[in-house]
Length: 448
Image 1: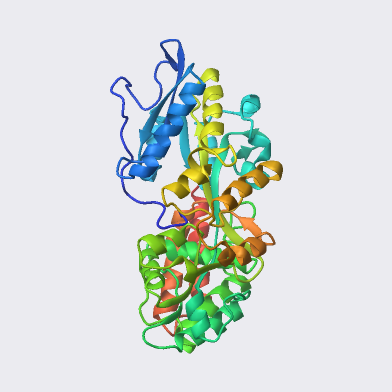
Image 2: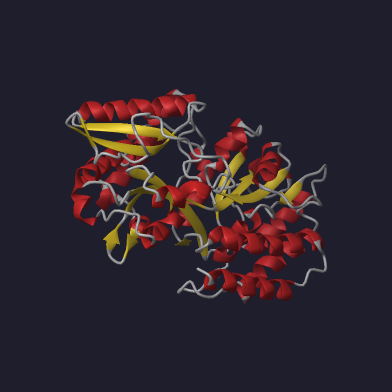
């Protein structure tokens, strides 16, 4: 899932923007007037005027610096449409440099549609400074097939003002699920429609959050070999028992259930919700779209202290890309996304000038000197209350970072039913629900 919402939407990806191209790939080996031409995707759509302008500025600057490279960008939202993704790959219509979610990396390699980047990594100046656990996502059998661009990890967003009203210390957020339950009960006791804790339970989002909560308890959804479900466990039962008790014993989750991300964001933005699980990029949405205030919104690490779900994205290269295109594409990634404090994602001074939030606690992409420089520039241009996120930054470093399970969307669909049953039926049989879910997940894994 995307951290800000339902990742696998049905919006169609944009078609090729150049009529000169027979397909979304370069089609002619990447040669254009003596230049190396690369097609890339995930350019912001025209409706996102500021981001589109930033992207175009950065591409123009790259081409000026590298006059022997021609970048042809294709816009789309979302950047990847699961309904067309495999067909584009198999049909040779994928861009030379194409966007992927972390969870897609192994699949693209398995179907032999990714170029091996290992011999060309010297072209990527930043590669050694990227977090190893993120690099490893795109490394298969010792070979590198992709480059991380961004990452996120889940945490607990909470309303500092409601904490104060409930007699809780907003500078000491809950660190365990028992503390979450106790805090939710006190917040719900404020009345006037206030909900202590909310969770998703529809459109696969309930399964996504069950997975995150299972990780936080030290559990897992599938075994290390990806062949058997591991949800019917003490950790799985602990997740569901906690949700059941907050919903039915404490009445701290409200009576309205089958919520999705937009419902919960609306509750938080309106000041009627104490806590929910999310990633840092939810915070500007809560402010700009849902009526929230930065000073009231804070972020803590995942309760439980054992682990957290991480996600993110990166770029892979078509297996049809020429060596010259691979070298050019790696240079483009360095320029656009992987130079600390600069580029499309890192030019914090430009972002601040256009009133975009700077200082949110995104998981750090870099290490060492690169990380220090990135953090220095970010701090110098911060325009949000960074102190509200210090607990998240400090606590998340101690957690085990885990990506989504294989066949995530199919598995989330199964787990959706489990979570929704617990939140809508007081007498739901947790043991039976997990047993049945385990069998269904085994079936999904067996068919893969």
